[in-house]
Image (cartoon, rainbow, N blue to C red; front, side, top):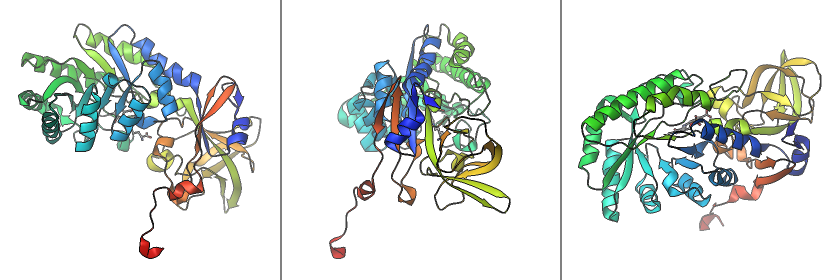
Length: 408
Ligand code: LLP
């Protein structure tokens, strides 16, 4: 198996495992798919950093004109440091702190996607203290079901996100009264790994009705931020292409005088990355067979957390017997697995496996649980590969630790 023109075996030999490998070409292809599909409509693509905030990947996207959707001061810092212009940065999240709001105002980001009246008042107060006006959109919750995993669905009334769409006029009315707030847009994000077009279309229709209503109240909306959420193939499902999304929604946006903002994360980076891991033991007891690998739920938590499916294939591709196995990590939790009862090519002791579609919410959700240094990340471009994040060392596990004097 190759990443672009480099055998994975070669990369793993040099950097060890577990290891995230990304393809330069695939990342750009995915970004360009959005860019080209929306080419004829005023738009900004704001990559959702939470999917993968590696600065090397961000610099690559920034050079192609990509913006950023951030949800913390840390993400804002990484976006700015990677050369993403502040005028292409939108800032969402239900719990922005005063410090984070100040930082974003100082940086002159495009707009805050505000999620509550309390937050709106806080932003107004801080902007007043700084002598500026804060550009905002209100995140509305259109109450649309997405039939995705409950943990990654966000657009229903019961969710903590945004303000109920039926109260939006009232909230915009409040925003208009605030001296240090400048209304710029409207925002929605209904969930992630959405594999059909209808939820996007339904939600957009609701938001456009609202835009019309707001305009009839004299409230001007310039940017419509439709959030992210386009799904990717993890198995044999085929979600819509950005081109299909464009075809479904652009007719609705015609002659509305709006600039469209999109916040794709997974659909740009998900299938541009894999996690390479080594089989350390094969174990059989009773009727079960386990393949124990050197990556754990601390490296890729999606199967444990969402019961997510990731294809797993041996890096040395050849014909072999099929077996039914659990692929598990070394962590002391039964939830530490990558696949259960999976029919796959019989893995061999010591060989490499590729866990596919791991570029999004892989490294970004990783941790040091069980005191495991975090994996390395590598970017492949043609025949070359570069380490874009060094593997952590044991020493890193002590970073920031302070021992009280009485223990010395
Ligand atoms: N915009 C906002 C406001 C979001 O909350 C999210 C994702 C995105 C954009 C990007 O969504 P995407 O295009 O990547 O679907 N950890 C979960 C996914 C959580 C998504 C959270 N919000 C997973 O591994 O499936």
